[in-house]
Image 1: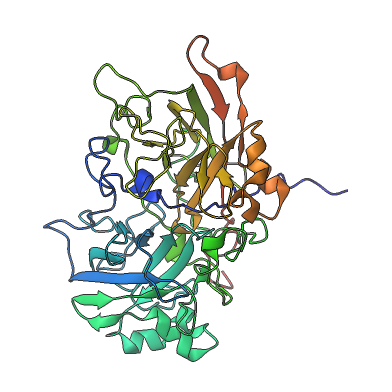
Image 2: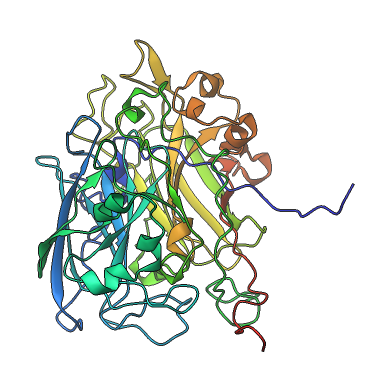
Length: 204
Length: 253
């Protein structure tokens, strides 16, 4: 026998199911009057600092069909590279930028949309700068545990080339799955759940 | 307050990375008994990496955004003077991390079918009727001890298209934020004593019976309000945070 660590087990994940929007974006699915608006629908206001960008995309299943019942959340640094979080000890983030957004995929064409600003660079654990990126989290019916990934920018080739996370991807062509298409200010980030173009998902 | 808003013990927010996720405890992405997972499951290995500042930070939500009825599903969609139909229950518990510490000040959102097993959603086609006084969503923020509570009606079981005769046991969906984006979790709560839990293909995606039992709320007789509502207790555990023993000092200092 040894001493008991007394740790607990993380609660097991379960799928968000087909009706995740009832809980997380009720106004989007026609349940009005309970909350004023849907949380995470707006990340910026008139005073937010930085370059305004729009990120759109789809989540595509193994048969090539976009998911029309998915929900995505993003988390990112502000334009100066600071997170709006108590664990951000390097400075104070832009008070006019939440850093967090939530978007359902459209039930018509499966497109999600985030109106945000381009994030600044933030350091890796060893102090090296990571390339500008946006963290994504995807849930839906049929997804048993939320999927984490990142979006990088196509116009940051030099920064991407020295990014420590991208450098960890053994099959180099797969790193491209994390780089958005399009150009400023309209980026397109399609997420492929399976197949040749399967997005690199993170256990992080 | 014993801890600050971010769970730190000494007035300083914690910045350690999270414990690695025990992937064998969670359901695998590909679980063919749950048919929709077949084409929606990544097939390639995940890229495993210790958390960076992008994962150890996360959004904070303030109490000011909450309405008075946000944690009362019996009344938050009902017409004035009306209430939702069904068995009145109180669901409560704590959000803890794997170290057993309370996770305070985090947003908990929940959604569910009505007492007849019907969701208020345009894609829902089950025969059971909508309840005009039940919307099915609620939310709250945990207090200093990680506690949350809400009032609702016990949801009904319902059939769903998977196998020919598959039914979901009564359940409430939970979405929980931690202090870091990597703690983000969605799960489902089941009810003590429900024999249908063990027939459900979605429950069955979880390989370990103990992990399933952790999703079953206990009837909490002590907290049941006489002549009003039965109580169920459901604790939720998020990933723990590693201690930063040496990490904040460069080598040699």
